[in-house]
Amino acid sequence: MIRRRLLVAVPVLAATSMGMFALGAASPIDPAQQYAGAAAFTTTEENLAQLRANWGVDDPLPVQYARWVGNLLRGDLGWSTSRHEPVTSVLAARAGWTLLLVGLALALVLVASVLLGTLAAYRRGGVFDRALRTVAYAVQSMPVFWIGLAAIAVFALTLGWLPAGGLTDLTATGTDPADVARHLVLPVTVLAISQAPWFVLFVRDAVAESLREDHVLAARARGLPGRTVLFGHALRTALLPFLTLVGTHLPELVGGAVLVETVFSLPGLGAVTVQAALGADFPLLAATTLATTVVVLAANLATDLGYAAADPRVRLDD
Image 1 (tube, rainbow, N blue to C red):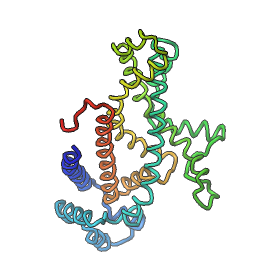
Image 2 (image 1 turned 135 degrees about the vertical axis):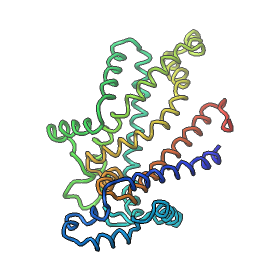
Image 3 (image 1 turned 30 degrees about the vertical axis):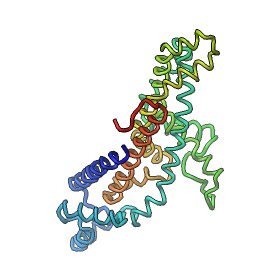
Image 4 (image 1 turned 90 degrees about the horizontal axis):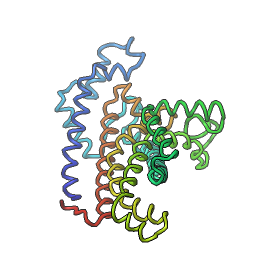
């Protein structure tokens, strides 16, 4: 299965990168003028033409794509016109912070959704169940950037409990782990809250359905404690499809991280992706899109392997 997934990943990555180049060619933004900034109004057309020739942006699209693929195979992702440094340097300096944000938010979502969804299913129809579903539907309708701005207004500006943004204090001379953790509380929580409704409602419905199955009813009939029946039988069965939800929902989690990093001014890939889009930095956009695609494909593969490990009835060669 791993070999088949790797073979499928090749055309997926190729199609993704081709789409990025096609969108770049269709963009009306001149990368040379974007790179020159205010100087574009005073510089000569010959200088702008020289910039385009140096970057090869006037070459036919197939030529540009073939050149980019050749450089990619040699480990060269090009030059970021918005950051004025190699794309590999941008990715190396910022990818770790994005992975940290997404990883912490995902862990928080999984733990909270399993606990809250299970309790709501066990007390389905009660006050806690109705309140949890109401809050989940309300949060699901809120844009993640709105939740981030509201969190800043309440917990940073009004109460002053947490910093409004950044990775460290302005006076910090290094990246102290305690300082970084304090600055990540709000963005991690906001990203987790924005993604939690899907997982909470899924766990709630899956556990509620599992509680009606024969093996769970039999466990209750044998006089097993309610906690054992709930977590040892019903939840264990309900978590199998939950693994699939994690893999399929990862792209939205990554997309939410882009907005959260922008709102909280975090030095991750989200902020530079927005900057690259505004500055028509196509090499950086292509690299970040390709990296995100690789992460999603790897997560889906890990999900399938985890599903097979959790349920021996699943055959990987099917």
